[in-house]
Length: 457
Ligand code: ADP
Ligand code: ASP
Ligand code: MG
Image (cartoon, rainbow, N blue to C red; front, side, top):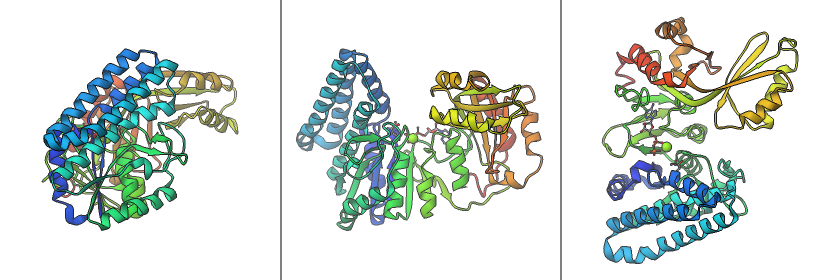
């Protein structure tokens, strides 16, 4: 069997869902399990309405809810035709009634917790997966909706819940295997699950890719396909650099670094379950389904280019911790990291000197509280609006003199921190956030003007 995951833009309207149906039809002999995201931008809207309700702005929240309802009804009616839609209408109606009620409850209390946020956010994938399953059935595809919350078991860390693999795998066998054996096409929402008490959770933004990989690994899939709106993993973000080209094949390690350092095309955790089971992952374009996309495998040819791709992660803050008297005394680093741990702030890049440590963190984390805590140990400064740029490629390991090549191109830029990752396959540095487009375009021109056809398309 295979897992096919379709992202938000791939299910954004009736036309897109119709394309999905024909793509899946072409794969029927391979026994697909289909995983879908919420329709494009729906999760953002749901989170906005949850926040509005939490701020007591009931009217605003309900108005957004109405607009979502209309969009989902229109899409379903266009896909299903009158007779089928009449039947399906009440199912969607019940969901929107629950959402409505939920929003009224939240605004009455005037407080939004991570737990209720997940309740609201889950509607996106719940609705899209039901519509896609119904659209499949209407096209003779034997689509069966399976509620992911009955299958994906997580802990209770709402909004960033951690999958519990053993229980999830058991449920996958129990719920999905029989459907596959009967020749049905299970359709599930990504991103959502439930804890052991059955309370709805979500596994983090962009998490539908991760859901697909969890399901694929749990079911022992032959391949996992991530269908999106670009031809595959490209040499850089095409929105920044339109010259970006497709990477035909990339290793799990390289893809993981890229995803972690900001290549939005893949959720950072996606490849882990696939690596463990050695299941190849493909990134494909639902608007251009005949394109071969990108294949992610354990070992990939390196080709003649040093790098495979460039990624950038914005909204980064640098935290400088200076301890003039301690000269990085024994135990100093430990106490710094303990503070980060206490505040549950994760660190991306670290550089140390005799008297100070610089660390980068995501700007949206609890930095003021952390800084106050660190100030008990040392002098602390922090500065936002930074970005991490990351060049990735396994050839980096065996090619001397690369850093000189990279930084010669950026001689006029203020480079804040440099690190050649422990994995030896990335070269990472920190710059001002507004320099990202210029830096990426320059590096892309230098390293990707001539491409080895073995690796790039
Ligand atoms: P989906 O909704 O299908 O999950 P995403 O929006 O999460 O899609 O990811 C696809 C987007 O990722 C692309 O439209 C592209 O703009 C962006 N992107 C960033 N870096 C890359 C890259 N290196 N290769 C391809 N796409 C990238
Ligand atoms: N719908 C969720 C999000 O927008 C999950 C996903 O699309 O992967 O974050
Ligand atoms: Mg995505």
